[in-house]
Length: 239
Image (tube, rainbow, N blue to C red; front, side):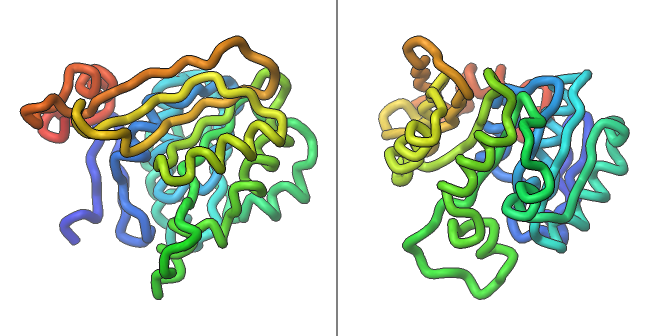
């Protein structure tokens, strides 16, 4: 398959089994999320977020969980072949089941590229449906689960589209999170944001930071912001 391997500068992502391939959302979240010494990657898929965070945080111990057996095959290979395999643990388990066996705060950072389609038609591919639809991981379950697994002061980072932003923020507030950073990601300056990378904190913060970021300039060339953000990850031809 043409897209079965995606090459980063310091690691490769084999993705012949996983329903969802490497994409811009995971790249942005991997580069913008806040990590720590103990990180949980919920719904790791191919493992790209865990590997980017392992590169960014050289002392981090990372736990990656994934419900889909096909994605686990790719993630296991990608972790094993990376230079950070000793710092990443992969578990084939849903968040719901993980919570029943890990009830106490364990992490100082939780990251997730969550499913967010709840009104669109579901795909006949069950793996792709799990990865894309909130039926497999409702926002309330994700957010309350992340809150319970985080230490006080811990960070929860996600990438979501604007259509679900208000719902997601409302649930985070209800659960007890405080918004720390909201990255408004635009494709080009003249368009509305296509994605939001949100960082919430378990605990009180001051006024949240709002950053408007453009991936491309008006002439469609890659923006300086995006090039600087991804310069340690993507190969030059992919920037």
